[in-house]
Length: 511
Image (cartoon, rainbow, N blue to C red; front, side, top):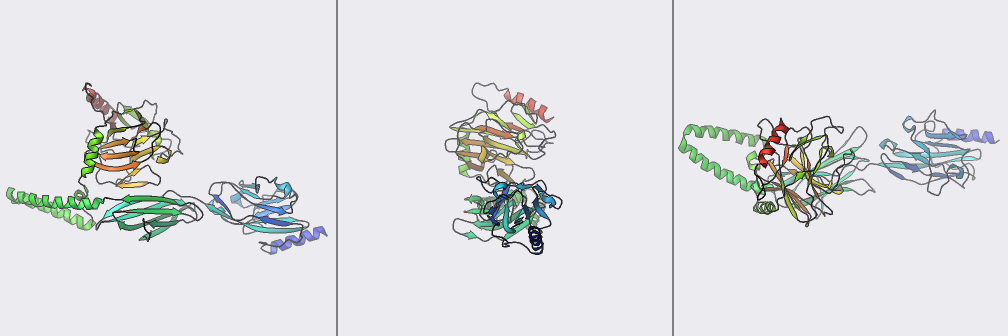
């Protein structure tokens, strides 16, 4: 009779969906907790157990998704049967514990332990248990999530005192929500686009136009998780200053034209043809000419840079046996070799400077230009400070402000912007590439500023709460033939032959 009942139960199981099926006998009931959330790549347990508690060691236990005959895990007669198991779950599933107090299978805990969760694992799982007395099943919903990258904000100043703000983030699951807002309200984007990569992860990109004097926030997130947010405050519009610069250029052009008329018609004609060519280019691109994008330095920047110069300190590179960088005196570049972490710039080519600082105001300069006409201005570099006593070369360590790295970076693949080491990332538009970068550390007020020394203009500033000793920090990048040099100033009574020795090592480095 028992065998016949078992046969009838299996027939019913194969002919019906089983979700929420009532037990044949009151002696067997399946209980579950749902839903279950897990981050992609992590391990989780889908809880399922018998009520009243009884040993499930000799029972039939099947976990499956859409079809009973293609189980995620199948257990019968005290052993696992893997002949019909779904291939994607091989080696990733076993019995787990529903809670810390559970003793497992002997007490009726038939929970499913799933390792290395993927986005394809998301969905419903049926827990089915059968014995000679009856059977029961319930469904557990698994939600797989992946928190993507922090939003990356970038700004492009347009005409009419407006800014085109864009926000992008990648690596999300499920599809994230993106929201723009300012200090007063939620903003409606001009564009919102989603895409999905081969691994099933989602990316999002959006942009809108805002006033050049506002604070804008872009947040990206998924339900029941804290969203990631990027915020930028724009106070002084470069476009406004550019307008003043443009007016100055117009006046200059008029005076120059008058002079050219006096000097000769032919010269004037040639200049006029060149001016016409430039005007045609402006109309075709619908953007200001390059010379109009060169902003005049603000008086406050000049004053601040002048004050910073009074705090100048000669920074030297620490002694290191790092095989991936070449050092000659105060000059630095990469070793032009095969890097174990590829061509992406990482801490493997980074180095600290000395001395370190625990208070006060300090200023130093880094030259990015070369004396050789065949070598371009350096475009790959990091310059800033760090609290790290030892710079880790581990490939999984990303240097950001959250782990003690505050720096400005330049990427040759993104010539139109500089980037801070913040989370989220902040891009700064480039109007002219500096030949020399000035670094001003105000330890006590928690401010780190970067200046274009030749243009006497502030590139950007970071604020932080510094603790312990803070060291100058440098990275010459990878694959950039140009050399970075930490500039030394002659102190009173110091020999003046230092420049000669530096120049000789420079030639040795660049050769």
